[in-house]
Amino acid sequence: MPTPRGCCPVLPAWRCLPGCSPCTRRGAAGRTYAAYGGVYVTTAVLWLWLVEGHPPDRWDLLGSALCLAGMAVIVFGPR
Image (tube, rainbow, N blue to C red; front, side, top):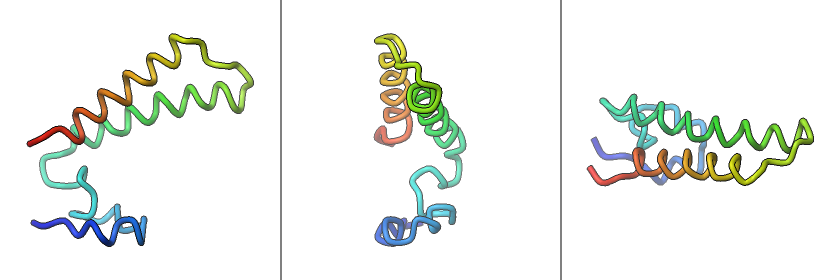
């Protein structure tokens, strides 16, 4: 099924529809979960810094970067 990528940047709500996001295709639930996990960890570190006032140390930043890099490999890797 071709993906109508032109609609996604214009109407972000369309990302929830099947076929509009690279992670919503059939059999991609694991990739969707990986994307969620990478973003969740990074958001948690940002929350700690911006809301709770604790600046991240180098290990927090390295861990976030590793999570985002791993997410990118899983989600955007060639199939």
